[in-house]
Each structure stands twice: as C-alpha cells, then as structure tokens.
Amino acid sequence: MRMWRHVGVLLLVGFACSFELDLVDNSVPATVAFEFTMSGADEASGTLMIPVILSRPADVEITVEYALLNGNNATPGVDFDIVTGRLVFAVGEYRKELPVKINDDGLEGEMVESFDIALSSPTNATLDESRAIHSVRIADHILPRVIVGPGFTTSSEGAPSMLLVKLDKPSEGTSTVVVGVSPGAPAAANANDYTIADGAMVTFQAGEMMKTIAIGEKDDALDEEDNETVVFTLRGASPNLVIGAAKTIDHLIADNDDMPQVRFNNATANVQENLLGETTTVSLNTASGRTVRVDFIRDAADTADNGDATVFNSPGTLTFDPGQTSKSVVIGVNNDNVDEDNETVLVNLSNAVNATITTAIHTCNIVDNDTAAVSFSTSTSSVDEDSSGGISISVRLSTPSSKQVSVPFTLNNGTTATDGSDFTIITASPLVFDPGVTQLTINIDVPDNSPGNESTERVVIDLQTPTNAPLTSPTRHTLSISE
Image (cartoon, rainbow, N blue to C red; front, side, top):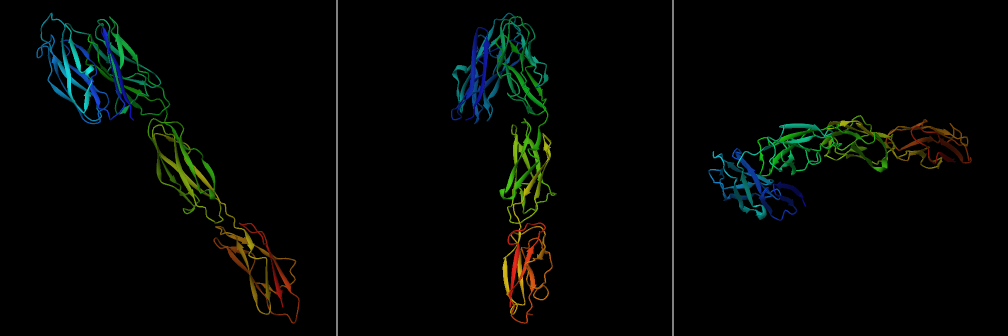
C-alpha cells in the first residue's frame, strides 16, 4: 500500500484552521477541497490564485466546479471578478489554483469587503464539506506584501542555511504565511536532504518585517547530483497579508561528497576445480545517491581455455541503484578429469560511471584436482620362448594429462635371463606420453635360442621417477620366460 501525506496548518487572526491530506487506500475516492478556507486581499492585489487540493494524487482524471457563492458586501464586477469554471486534475496531480481578480474601484473610505467561493459537483472524488467554501477579505487599505528572497539561493549540504521571508512594511498584528516545499529540477532534492517540512509556517508578530527559517541541509555521506534543487513557495497567507510577486525561489544544495570507489573485494581467489567456480563480489566503498555503472569483461590474457572456465554474461555491465553497494560476477569452472597445470581466469573492470575504480582486476586461480600417476598395468606376465617371439608390457597413466609425461625404466638386479640372448628390450627408455595419451608399451623380443631344457628365467623391469607425474603401484614388472 502506498502512503502519501501532506500536512499543513494555517493560523488566522483570532482562529486556526488545519488540514490533513492522507492517502491510505486507493480504492477509496480522493476528496477535493480548498487548501485554505480564507485569504486576504486589497485593491492592489491583482489576481489571487486560490489553491484547491486533493487528498492524494489523482489516479484518474478528477474535476470539480467552482463559482461565486455570495458577494457579502463586495460587488461582483466592481470589487472583484470571478468566472464560474471547472478545475481538472490530470492523473498524478493533486494541486490546482483558481484565479480571482481583485479590482481597484477607485473609491476611498470603503469598509472591509468580502465574498465567498464554493466548490461543487466533483467527478471521481468526494467533496470535503468542511473546506468547500473559501472566503476572500478585501481590506480597506494596502496590506503588507510577504515575499521570499532573494530569487535564487545556494548552499552546501555541509553548511546549513536560512530561508528569508520578509514583508515590505511592518506586520499589522500577528500574521502568518505557509511555506510550500517541493522538489526542483533537473536534479531534485528530497526530504532526505533537508529538515524544513512542506507546510512550515512563518509567523510575524506586530511590527516585524523579516523572519528566517532553517532549511536544515543534511550533510549525508552520499555522492549525489552536484546541483540538487528544492523549491520554496509561499501560500496560505493570513488575511492581513498579501503574497507578493516574489513568492517562489529555487534553492540549490551543492553536494560535498566524493564519488564512491568501485572495486573487486578480493584481488585473487584460489578455487578447487571440483568446486565448479566462484562468485566474486564487486562493491562500492560507500553507498551513492546516484546510479553507478561499471563494465566487466574476461581478459583474453588468462590461461584457462574456454572449455575450462566461463565468466557468465561477459562482457557485461554491473548497475548499482542508489543505495546499493554490492554486485556479483560469477565464474564457472569445468571439473574435468585431465591432469593439468593450475590455470587462471582474469576479469577486468572498466568504464565506471559516477565512481572511480580501485581494484580493477580479479584473478581466479583454478587449482587442478587430477593426478596422472604412472604405473605398470600389471605386475607380472609370462611368455613361452617356443611360441611367442616377443611380448609387450603395458605402462599407463591413471588419467589423461595436458602435459608431456616422461618415465625412465631400468632392469632390476633380480633379472636372471641374459640380456641379448634370452631377451632384448626393443623400446628405448624413457617412455614419453604426449598430452592425452594414457598407455604405452615396453616391447621385449624373446628369441627361441635354448638348446635344451632350462629353468624359467625372469626379466625384472623398474619404473624410475617420471617428469610431470608421480609413480604409483605397481612400479615393478616381472616377466617370466619359460622353455
């Protein structure tokens, strides 16, 4: 449910009139009424603009009729002019003004004159009967003019200033005027930027001509638009004042905060491959009152292949709405079964808007979790020299490797067969596994050269320390050669 409130008080000479506008439920029709029930004038007033308000901004078009109710002792067409008409509130509007022209009839020595204006026949709204009539009192002399000034003022949010309201001659008894407060343009200030409230009242005692009211600029920590503006408008003067021509001023509040810094929270992270990636945080060192944007992109200089890692939505843009301080960049990692060197993924920040970049690069170190260990496929084998002529002994890697793996092999002292006559190792040491290869063989020639029966002989081969891989069992293979 949306809440919108406008509160004000008008203190008149001898009595007070209060009003409250409150939206609590859009399903209930808005009410329409005069904002104030009385205003003053004199024969030099010219055209009065009398405000009519809704209890909430219109969500459909709302209309209300207005007309002279009675002239009392003022004569229409002589003392004043008003044309029966209609006010139309467009969607989103809640304040309109109806014009009444006060005439200088050239007569001296008249008494105070007055007339009443009435609202009627609203559409899409209900009439607040307690404020459906507005009385205008025309004084028998020239009243003090109340103005706000000078025409444009400025301050810093760290240096609160005062709004000046003044009369062109001393107040005739106690008199009041209401200060309207509204956002300016193009960069609008809001109630978080100052303490003066819409509907603040300024009171002049008899004989006073000048008053000040604190604007109350707030020294926040938000980087905001440099030129935020608030508009002050005088309205609702008591009947012994007339609002002068200088009734509105723009007040600029200059921001005094530096732009926030945008950065990666951590410059580096070590991520185990089987954890499938990381979410790295990009943050502002302080909240901003403006929208902050920063681009991010994967750096082509990183060492991870596209199949090994992904920076999602890269290239992309992170957008921090006012007040937000944290965004995320997601890096995905493929948990393959290849033994490989640790790889890096680099992400860069650039092109910051409404912020400066500090930590611009994030390095994700992908820690490989695969080991390509070298071993014999079996620890023993046998061959009959009468039937074979040779044998191949398999050496394997436990998993594929992206690196070249080299493993030397040697004859063990436990070999009982005679090298060169009983067997010949054809394959040269070391065995070299190119990337992706997982199995090689040591080929041994076994000739049939025994003149008679002889006992079984052994060829014992040991694997030595590999490069780019560890050894794992079995590291010794025993070949039995039988007659």
